[in-house]
Length: 385
Image (cartoon, rainbow, N blue to C red; front, side, top):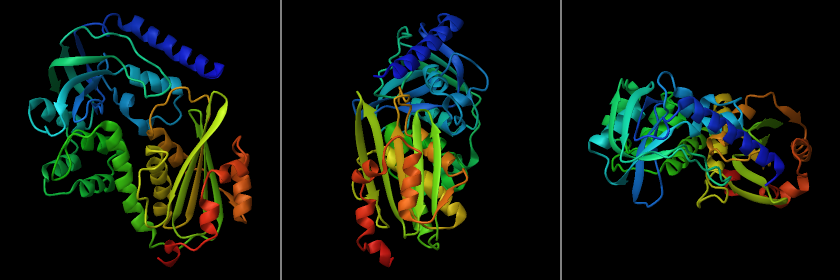
């Protein structure tokens, strides 16, 4: 770990201890009262019997910022980690098949709510204020086993409520209905996770529901852009946040997409990548959920502008990204990149040169760990679509 990463983690821990001193014993008791953002979480450990529950801070009022990734652009890594640490996670172990019953139905109302919900949780024992920042997994605040839970003041989003009660609607169609209704992705993901969508409903671990939602929406957007004209220029977009640098290259070609990631581990540079054409991807991407999160971000731009293109996304994960906070930051990073004024280039080579100069990794290194240059030298089925 670099000293930079260590400094960042020390700063985060210092802020956490400051929070503890402000709230006294609220993080070390057998109960908590506060306003859930609203937020629910489904774990993946011990699947298919998983830990499920609400996330609640020890404060009342408008806490929506604590679990709204769409509103976190411009926030520091320290800010975002502390948003997560301030949420106490209540849990009960439940089979993924159980999507009914008072506890789950209450959580479904939480997920549906359009505003923070007053919440009172009673735990089976004291909740420890200990937290872990290991650099490998997203941070969480204290966790406690729920003995009883009371929620008040829920106000349902009408489009979510309508979709929830439509049990003839397939999960995929339900996700797209909500997305096309303007519901934020993070909200849709919570509803998916807590077993509210589809014909054969079940609980879905939160990290899986995030990727599934991004994938479903992305496939729909690809279907849409295949009807648009191909761009006639090379466009380069750049954005940097939270120790991540993103460069997006759009180039004249029928839909083809590749994402290449590079990261530093003990001074050694590692790479991962995956790609698709108009047929999509038929295996889990080597770079996991980031692949779909980035794909969605760039497809929204193409749909908005009614254009089609080939796409390369380069992501450099720098040592300053000391604590991973989730693939939402990839999606929001790409969304932000696509809001910038692009640099226009005359050739593919010039576009790659320009993109690489925005990063600390050379063009040859990027290309040697990707497939786009090889794919462009051969005809693919997508050329005939």
